[in-house]
Image (cartoon, rainbow, N blue to C red; front, side, top):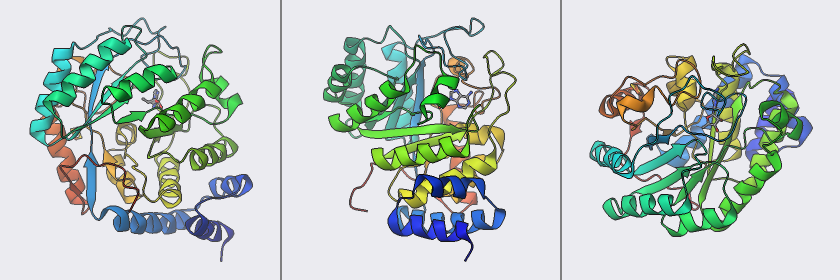
Length: 350
Ligand code: 5AD
Ligand code: FES
């Protein structure tokens, strides 16, 4: 058997590989190996989740950010972006519309906005939980202190998404200014898990400076963290960032990494991301067929959608939430899957 295939087999058996083995698998990609990988990933996905795809309603509630990540369109030095911050009433209105459409998870995502004190976030979380007690709340507000994560968890937040972006320290330094630390980011993730959040991490595929070695380190970090969710999508350049002229990530490598993640973490929640849908009109469908099982359509009010542009040409910025949900439902049906009305919690026992 080809070495790449026997490594995929080993990954399937042992759910882990050595660093050099990851590097080999990533360096020696071939269409045939990828097809075998996706078939295995779909088998595992079907066994765990049937043909059900979970949805999360994404509410991009602020695009203020105090950070300056080189890749990100809402970095603080981007003076061309018009900043906005939804009021608690506007956020609740998104939930109301989302609930009616069948969403049972709301993801509050924003830049690291200094305005988001624990008190303000606690109030918003409590209000959502009061109005929609059967829904899960996912936060995606970046790095905060242990105490802050604890308070928000106690206020009712169930899950937290914080991509580690890259596990390799030198690569982290190429993507972020010196004020940001990869070590702190990893510590935040450990804190989130310890506090009891269903925790999501992830990385961009094809970011400047990424190598098979750094991707291998991502897989090893993820194996060790053992998160409940892993979000990966291609890096897409944004014209108002230092990376405006860099090359973007590919569909091919993103799908391959998704397949490997599904084999390594059978129970994990893996979104077919908007970034993947942005660089390929069938990107999200291909993501599902490579092992993903979650989609996260936008619930943000139409008026602010084009202001939350992390990268260029982001899709769905002109669609009503209802259109987006229906569009995704028929996209999923077209490949034999269905969107379900379910919180879509991580299930230990699967
Ligand atoms: N291209 C693709 N993904 C990006 N993100 C931020 N900027 C970009 C970009 N230019 C991703 C980061 C972040 C998530 C919310 O969006 O991985 O964690
Ligand atoms: Fe948003 Fe298709 S998913 S319009």
